[in-house]
Image 1 (cartoon, rainbow, N blue to C red):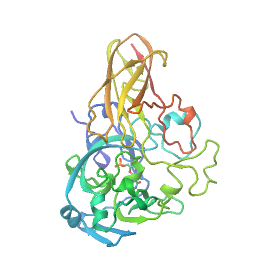
Image 2 (image 1 turned 135 degrees about the vertical axis):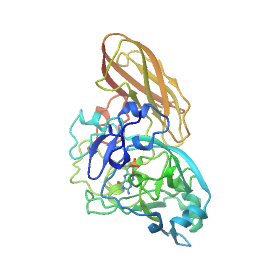
Image 3 (image 1 turned 120 degrees about the horizontal axis):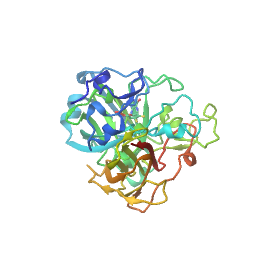
Image 4 (image 1 turned 90 degrees about the vertical axis):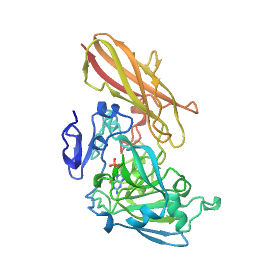
Length: 370
Ligand code: MTE
């Protein structure tokens, strides 16, 4: 039976990391339950108070280094361009921060566990088509250009306080998978997920998929918005977050190869005997997960998980493995390999960074078999 809906139409078992603004993740076993995440279980990551804009009130400005600046209404966006569906996983760069917090404290940041990642079917128009209508072409000499997005929410945590924004390289913006979306899993895009219209940038960290988008600007370099120039960057472990200047550190863009164990999860008690372990692997921009290994002895020996078909080339790839669980403590470890033969780091400690981003260490859960 479906759980009762609560705040923002979400399941009542969402783990709420903050009420204002609403930040919540589903229990990992819920995520393991379907390749496409139901809207009521899709994680929500918000940096500020967000708008309540009816579609007829919504406007989008497209300007900057374009020959024909545009001012689009919802009606025009949804009727003047060809519509496309893309199944894509959004993953927050802060997903799995809880494991980094066990290494060293990260003040003021949400302790996301396994659930700041979800997959939906998005419908919208290609950003490339809108940029082409505005007179932007993906020419080789346009290297270095960025397409900046601005939402109309108010992020009080930003310095100075400002609407949320970010940017992606023009070459990515012109790729067919990048959408201006107004439907999610065949429903109008809910307000909490950026309705009436948001950007969806498959293959990149979720932070680049700007919600409530009202301005798109083609410009000479990356966005100077706080969330691009200061936050969502990997800083050296010894950096002082209060003293770093804009532009310092490594700007996060395409997702790193990662995997996680969703079911069972930390602290579970499971009966002895047959146990199905389930999780996902995800590869970065344009790559695919080709193997997932699972260990029940902290990485001394490994067996290969059964890889399931990925719902799309822009989504996670579910996997499962049936094991025979013996009574006592059980520690499960998983790691993924991509189609270039790359795998990911073993320990969260080796990745610790002051803002707690990009944890793609081997996945580990500890439980008890009774
Ligand atoms: N866009 C706006 N306008 N404001 C935001 O706070 N959060 C970003 C991104 N887009 C955000 C935003 C982050 S950090 C993530 S991970 C995704 O939206 C989360 O999308 P979701 O809430 O639909 O899951």
